[in-house]
Image (cartoon, rainbow, N blue to C red; front, side, top):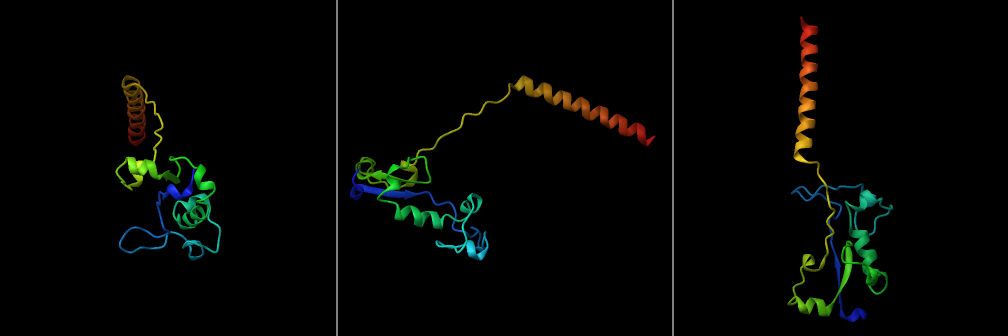
Length: 132
């Protein structure tokens, strides 16, 4: 796949600063900006994507080409962009993986709630007995 015909995408979530009108730093000063003086943990990366953006841009002709569209950054061939009418929206190309969640049956939930309610009522009766 020739990189001359690719567009690189990065789903930037945070730049190290709050998104309110005060724009307060979310990390210590040495962990802000695109080239922080201290290494970021995974949790800190979630609050400052700039170093990762820069690193991935430098890998755009190599490792980035192998990333899937479910990852934070990925490449899209020009043919795919042309097929979408040159719509450059990230959400047009990013694939979202939904995790299947199983819930308990409503009847089972209601039975659990009734049992909890009985336990609460019993506890309240015991407390009332202590107050007499």
